[in-house]
Image 1 (cartoon, one colour):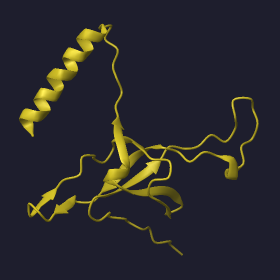
Image 2 (cartoon, rainbow, N blue to C red; image 1 turned 180 degrees about the vertical axis):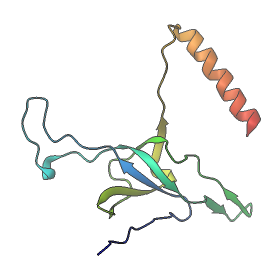
Image 3 (cartoon, one colour; image 1 turned 90 degrees about the vertical axis):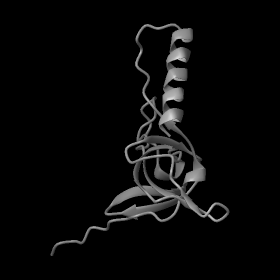
Image 4 (spheres, one colour; image 1 turned 180 degrees about the horizontal axis):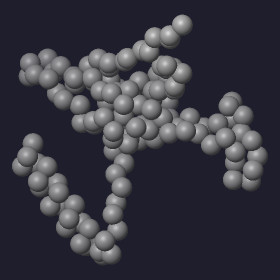
Length: 128
């Protein structure tokens, strides 16, 4: 018999996150039981809601993260759920502390990196 798969679409400003896997064995080679494992605080956004309705302005505030973004969220944030045999966290956008991006080392000094960041921020503001 074929098992039905569940598709989950978050509502409002909710985000569905697939947490990073936890370590099964410590650096010293000791097995870590499930009860002793730390809850992950990093994960990948799998789905997002449309955003939050702002009553005062009568407009929709879009979510600031997108599918595929690696995010940092609070240790006790959101609700743990199991969908199709995999673990996920459903969290409010407010529970997400930031987006983790890879930095490409181009051999630049700190001042050059800051200048590139400022240019990137200026482009994002003018595009938004």
